[in-house]
Length: 318
Length: 248
Ligand SMILES: Cc1cc2nc3c(=O)[nH]c(=O)nc-3n(C[C@H](O)[C@H](O)[C@H](O)COP(=O)(O)OP(=O)(O)OC[C@H]3O[C@@H](n4cnc5c(N)ncnc54)[C@H](O)[C@@H]3O)c2cc1C
Figure 1 (cartoon, each protein chain N blue to C red):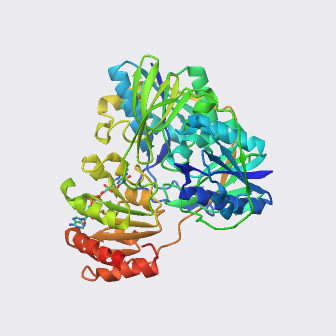
Figure 2: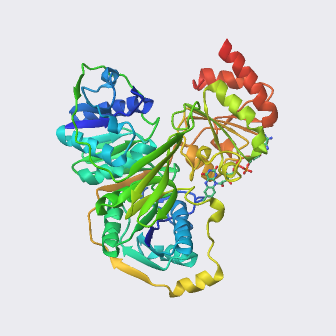
Figure 3: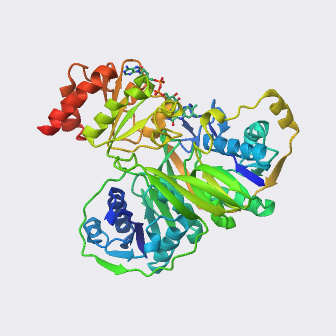
């Protein structure tokens, strides 16, 4: 038996979430007393994963996998899980993983728990803690099937070093056919995306109009952060839909979330609650966001943000 | 085109979440239930197909009798008929298997389902369903155009969009973007009257076993009060973020 993790990469380099799922996988493998195996795709240098506990890495090299395809990736994980007799398969919560995981669950007839936030509290019955009700609560879920799939929520377990002497094998998997064909990919380049960001700078209707977003982008630039917005802002067309965060928008689980001119409606908070530290800048001392925040400034964004930018520049330069 | 829209019956987004029975059950007391917001986008998109290209729309829910008002609302918005599969939806895999039985019998060309439900947020039912009935599947879909037997779709990816093609039959996990918020339909009086006469069929469940079970719930730990920093003392904010929170 073994635990298998999918360690996702971009341009041959591991994503931060890959190190987190390997760290988590190590914990589960030691709870079960079995080996940890990682699956990687088109990575030349895999040894970094040994530092986090991967005893064996299976790397698949195949050009037809350079663009993600849910059927093909689910097929790879299925074959790796069968080859290694994996009882637990762990993936991250990227948009691609969330697309693939249900297909893998059917292939392996495995119970699947998504949005998992902690190591299993028990391994028999196998019990995990998951986010539920759009981050307003947690559920303790038992998985009863022989094979189990865990989708780990981002930034929930952390990255933990645990060096082992690992080996890497070339894994010759069958690439399954898919009738879903990618014809074009458009990516906003040169910008930190919400999914990858450690810091997110978000602004709401309090900014009055799209012409005032220059300072939001400048603040994000100083902090190497992604920009985001509340729902009405994207509905009004002030900002692109991809920036809308909240219950019906993108989830944010960053280390720092700065909310500027956002009231803190329950639907907004539902999507950003998983962020570690929240800072609010709002003119209204009664804005509900202050109840959810760690740090707050009662003040006008048009005065506070430019000053904050200057002070952060000085702080970074020091 | 025969379209099936999967409808989840979920607490209204402003609901306070509480638990009873020693934290083993969700407390439905005083909670208003609605069509899952992601499913509402899908239903509106289905209405667009019906009006522009011609389609019949069936809505389906896996749940007890208390979910029927939600299905009636979907009928009032414009679906033609409804199916309720009479079992408690305790697990995503179970729901997908029950829906698969309906899809196999009904021979739908297009199945639309919200990419996740606003209560358990599992993001598993549409993909599992597609896989169980061997239909093509696109998730996190923000646009879909159907031309005869084939579809061109856009899905969200990290930091952008991907365009894909897939033949019907097809399952789509939809989200905002598949229609605009402003285009969402509110049932009117005529729709509500007509919905009362539209067929709502209740099917017994196949009795498939769940693979997971929720044993208890927990609320997040209460948060301490916010630390307020004076707007004229932003150096303090920077110092707190650097030294105390260690996030910059
Ligand atoms: C089904 C449903 C789903 C929803 N999903 C989401 C979601 O995913 N995400 C989301 O964000 N919302 C969502 N909403 C909407 C949500 O209820 C709120 O309407 C929305 O979050 C409010 O956005 P806002 O805070 O930017 O605007 P407002 O509510 O208008 O608040 C603006 C804030 O800016 C402050 N302000 C004004 N001027 C200044 C200034 N000069 N400097 C500093 N502060 C200032 C004000 O004091 C106020 O607090 C949803 C609603 C529904 C019904």
